[in-house]
Image 1 (spheres, helix red, strand yellow):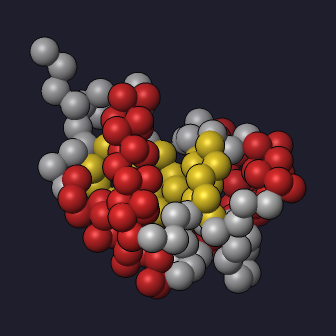
Image 2 (cartoon, one colour; image 1 turned 90 degrees about the vertical axis):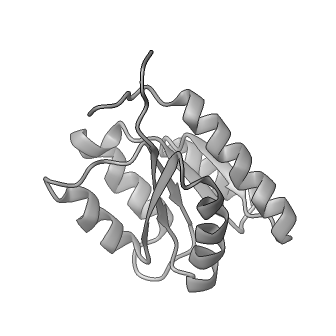
Length: 142
């Protein structure tokens, strides 16, 4: 039997309320998910570039952030060998077709539009966790 370590998620979102809401939903999965958060793209890249950082299994990335946009973060991630293999899921309030197309052109793994109602957001994150627990290929210990 293979024992799997918790799914590691990095949430990058400049909105404190959005980070807190996501944290509340992820707290329902604490037995099999760990979440780190960063409030900016610059902070996320700095965190990921630390040699002792355990890389996440998946990154949830907001697009509309001051300073470095989610598009710029995604582009930077995909141009660094160590970071380019991390799946990046866009979680944005935008559903504009040009934003979706641009994200996929930069090799986003998926694009999710943030659900506005709390119940729908909970279901959205539950589905995200279920999918990525199955989709990741990393096994414990590592």
